Length: 309
Ligand SMILES: *[C@@H]1O[C@H](CO)[C@@H](O)[C@H](O)[C@H]1NC(C)=O
Ligand SMILES: *[C@@H]1O[C@H](CO)[C@@H](O)[C@H](O)[C@H]1NC(C)=O
Ligand SMILES: *[C@@H]1O[C@H](CO)[C@@H](O)[C@H](O)[C@H]1NC(C)=O
Ligand SMILES: *[C@@H]1O[C@H](CO)[C@@H](O)[C@H](O)[C@H]1NC(C)=O
Ligand SMILES: *[C@@H]1O[C@H](CO)[C@@H](O)[C@H](O)[C@H]1NC(C)=O
Image (cartoon, rainbow, N blue to C red; front, side, top):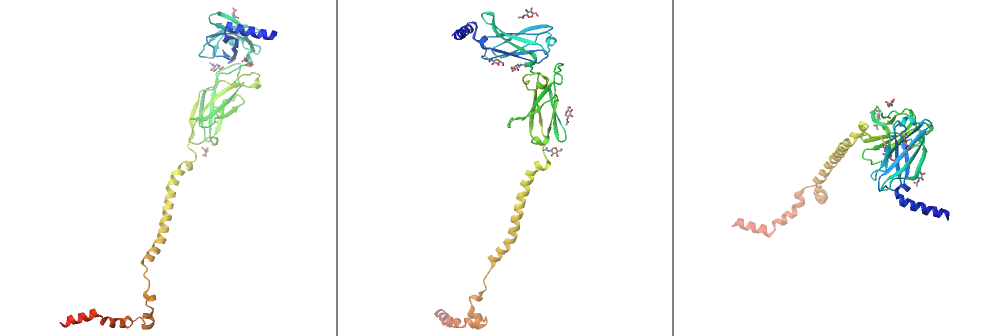
């Protein structure tokens, strides 16, 4: 019953103070050098929110504030001489204040955390690619940070330029600021895009999320083996030639036979068996009786009569 009452009271209070402030969950990351990046997760603020942060170690404390506007869910706090208060003991507190109609009403909403537990490094800079005989060397740099020297690790992301394929990630689990890519792992003659992000190495006791991605570097891999790219034109020329040659050859073999067939006139022997058998091929003898018959032909007679006339 008491719990229910408390819940109702707090809800009403929230509503009165202003909805946003109560459900805004403040988290701040640090580059562990100059600044805090504080954001307010939860509902999108309908009016500006003032964020105040304070960090202290055994030497003293710094505080500063920034404003989250409805258009941006985070803001940067850069306390003066922040780096002087950075140590493994530094503890911070962030509070939300409302700059609404109720002037700077303070809420109970505050977050405490150890500074070294939310380190989000600046993104790597100056990403470059150099080409070797059989590999590509991707190199980058980090802004100078005396506290985190040699305590970073990285992640290299390789994509084809038009993002047609899933990106490939190369983890670099030590503070080594280059990654060598063998040319065999990449497609020849393709546009690639690479960028890098950094994080504190967990073995160093520091914790925190990955940095933002660095700016990208683009390059084009060399065309592969010579054989590879002139294969197609060559195939396209040679194959039809070969086919043509084969056709020519076949034609050459078959054409005379065909001619022979076309010119073939059968021997008359088969048709005139009696001529050859009986008369030894003497056509006159064989045709003889027929000839006589033709002399008795009425037409022939007619002709003789006309001759006599
Ligand atoms: C606020 O943030 C902390 C740390 O990220 C998380 O554990 C907690 O659940 C969050 N609360 C709300 C209400 O989002
Ligand atoms: C601050 O953090 C937010 C995410 O929490 C990120 O989107 C934004 O880019 C950061 N701003 C800077 C200047 O690093
Ligand atoms: C911020 O720091 C100044 C001096 O360091 C101090 O006077 C002031 O009270 C602090 N403000 C808050 C809200 O802690
Ligand atoms: C990779 O480099 C070697 C050495 O120059 C070369 O012989 C090979 O063709 C290259 N492979 C590709 C796919 O570019
Ligand atoms: C890649 O570049 C880094 C930094 O310049 C260099 O130390 C490393 O030897 C290079 N590696 C190769 C294989 O070229």
